[in-house]
Length: 266
Image 1 (cartoon, rainbow, N blue to C red):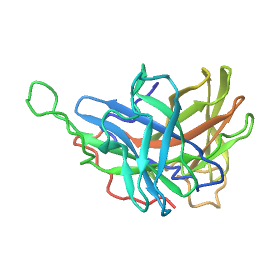
Image 2 (cartoon, rainbow, N blue to C red):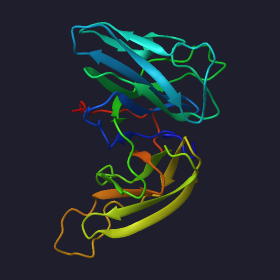
Image 3 (cartoon, helix red, strand yellow):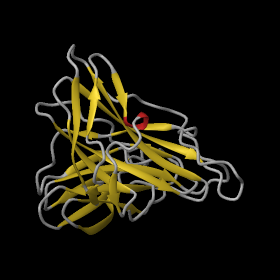
Image 4 (cartoon, helix red, strand yellow):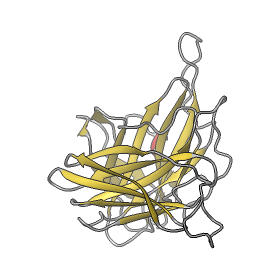
């Protein structure tokens, strides 16, 4: 992962949740990242809307391999919700990364929720164990039912924190069978001015995160008729089938960051 989610930062996931579509295959970004005294973790939850018990099955992971002997199947009883956080040892993977993608079979009638959380931690030798709960806030992550075709632009509007200075962290998954190249472009919405471009190589079946430097969110716009000068958006284009997200983070703070607002996925 090129840039961790944040050190002393607050964030807002800009892409919420893809609506369930036909077919059973689904993808979700997963992560487990630590800084000096905070950590970021994800969780997947499955809700069975049908009257029949069913099973969600892990099909594969990026950035590594599934651990031999790990549980691949998650039983989801009828009309019940199951969280992976309550199932230790299930869907474990051998990874050399703190960001990866899980590909899984979620049958029709199963709703999938991907959630991220920010935890406070007490570093050694203070004696307190790591905190497994998102006591500093939680946020919705995207769930995908298909890969974006090669060459198709992926738009992420609202790549900002209002007038607060921030940077955009862009997650990219190469779901193709060969290494690919992704182009990331950051724009100012008031005049659609290009603020920055990055090009990165992504190995096949691999996920990484790229930081896009922020700018003065209150800077003037070349179109003087516009009052909203802070709205930003990101366009990602890749030459392989892919998935992307944008996560905006603020600068350093003098205390633990908190996520004071939440919006349920829809």
